[in-house]
Image (cartoon, rainbow, N blue to C red; front, side):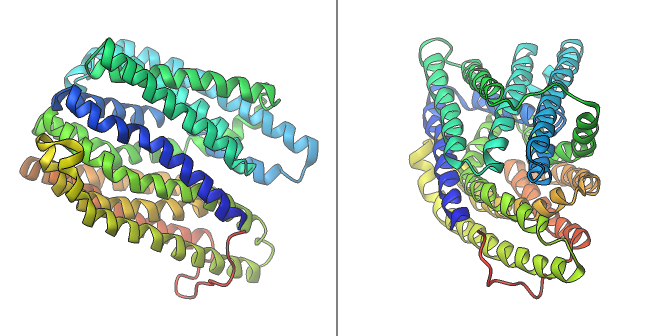
Amino acid sequence: MKARRASLVYLAANLAAAAVPFTMLPVLVRLIDKAEYGQVAIFQAFVNMTLAIVGVNTVGAVKRHYFVARNDGASGEASYAHLIGTTLAILAASFALSFVVVLAFGRWLVPLTGLDTRALTFGLVFAAASFVVNLRLADYQVRGRAAAFGIMQVGMALANLLLSLIIVLWFLRSAEGRILGVTLSGVAVAAIALVSLARAGLIRWPVRAAVKEALAFGLPLVPHALGMFLLASADRFFIKTYVGLAEVGVYAAAVQISFLLRVVNDAMNKSFQPWVFDRLSRGNDTADTRLDTGRVVVGAFYRIGAVSVVMAGFLALSGPFFIPILLGAGYADAAGLIPILALGTAFHGLYLYLINVLLYTRRTSALASTTIVLGLINLGLLFLLVPRWGAQGAAWAFAIASLMRVLTVGGLCRKAWPLSWTKPRFSVSPQ
C-alpha cells in the first residue's frame, strides 16, 4: 500500500511536469514554424546526449549506496554524504571538460545540429543543472519522500513553463526563446536543490573510496547512456539530414504526445525501483531465498508491465483522433506516427522495469555493451528506413530497437539473478 500511495504521488507529479511541454506544444507550434520547432527538438536531443557525459551517470551510485549503507547508522549516513559530494565534484570536472570541447569544436557541430555554439553551450548548462536536480530527487526517492519529490519536480516544470512563455511571447518568438527559457528554469531549480542538499548535511568533501565507488558505477554506464542516446534521440539528426528541420518538428510533436506514456511508466518505476532494491537486498541469503525473491520480482514485473502495454494500446487508438485538434492541420502527418511510437514506448517501459535488477547487481558493464550494440543496430535501421520513409521510418526503427532491448535485457537479468520467467509469484504485493 505504501508503494502504491507513492506511485500515485509520483504519477501526479510526473503528469503535472509532463503537462508543461504538453501545454506548451499547441502554443509553440502556432508561434514558431515547424523548422524552428525542429530546432527545439534537436536541442533536446543534444541535451540527452550531454547527460550521458556530464556527471558520468553517478546518480545511480547514490541511490544504490543508500540501501547498502542504511543500516550502518551515522557512519552510513556520512559515507552517503561523501558520495553525494563526490558526484558533485565529478559533475564540475566533466562539465568543464565538455565546455572546452564545445568551445573548441562547436563550429563543426553547427551543420549537423542546426544549432549555433551559444545554443550548444545552453545545452551543456541545462544538462548540468538537470544532474543536480536529479541528485536531489534521488535522495527524496530512496527515502520515500514522494511529496518532496513531487514539489521539486512540479516546481521545475512550472518555472520552465512561465519563463518559456514570457520569453517566447514578449521577447524572442523563436526557438532561441524556448531554449533560453528551459535553461534559465533549470539553473534556478538546480540552485535550490544544491542549497537543500547542503542544509540537510548531505554534501561532504569527496574521499578516495567514494570516488572509486562513484566512477566504478558511473563510468561503465557512459557507453550505456550514449547507446540510449542512439536509441532515443539520434533519429532527429537523421530526419534533419534526409528530410529537413520541418519534418523533425512534426516527428518531435508526435514524440511529445507519446511521451505521456513514458511519463506514467517513469512514475510507476519511481516506487517500483526502491521496492526491487529493497526486495533483492533482503533476499540474498541462500539459493532458495534468491530463487523465491526472483519469482516475486518477476510477478511484480508482469503486473506493472501489463499496465504499460494496456496504456500503449489506448494511446495508439486514441492519439490520431486528437492530433488535428491539438496541433492543427500543419501537423496532420503526426497522426500516423502515434501508433508506432506508442508501441516503441511500451517496450521502453518494460525495459525500464527490467533494468532495476541489473542496476542493483551492478551489471552495468554488460548493460553498457548491450546498449551500445543495440544503439548501433538502431543507427543501421535509421540508415535503411529514414531515407525511404522519412519520419515513419524513424518511428519503426525506434519500435524495433526497443523490442530487441527488452529481450536482451531480460536475458541479462536472468544471468544476474535467478528469475523464473515461467513461474512468477503473484501473491506478494510491493510494500
